Length: 195
Image 1 (cartoon, rainbow, N blue to C red):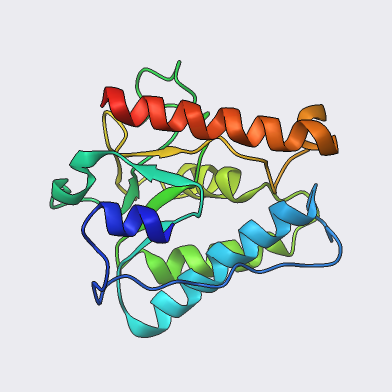
Image 2 (image 1 turned 135 degrees about the horizontal axis):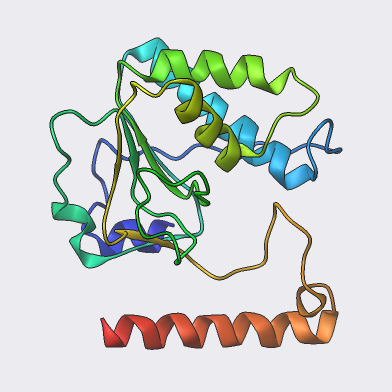
């Protein structure tokens, strides 16, 4: 992530702060330890933003920025911002009920306290979703909150070993893990050369 910040010319920018990811020994009521850590990390950041009264852009550590990310302008009426999302087949993200990805999410100051409280209460339920799903649930229950989607995305989720879901066999097998990592690096390098 530090390399991405430098690449975008934001190294030393006072608006950039790093948040230590939360980790747990068990999954609790989540489907994995990583899903619990991701949810709790987002919630911690939102609670801090709510206390300070600031808007916040949450960038997960597996996000690669598109060059236009630095100059991207949000409309005046945005409250939730999806800078990166999927899946690719979603043609109209603003009306879709199936948005994946929380790797580049923005929340305006007036929405942050409401969302932080919602996530806190949702976490207490036995049937709560992952953080991606929680943001969708929030939007369903708060249809007046205006979501804005970057089209096309200004941040893409980098291919890497998952910390949230079940790892594929090549990410669990010692000899193949290194090879898979190398292939991902080469694919990322080629993609940037084409951009």
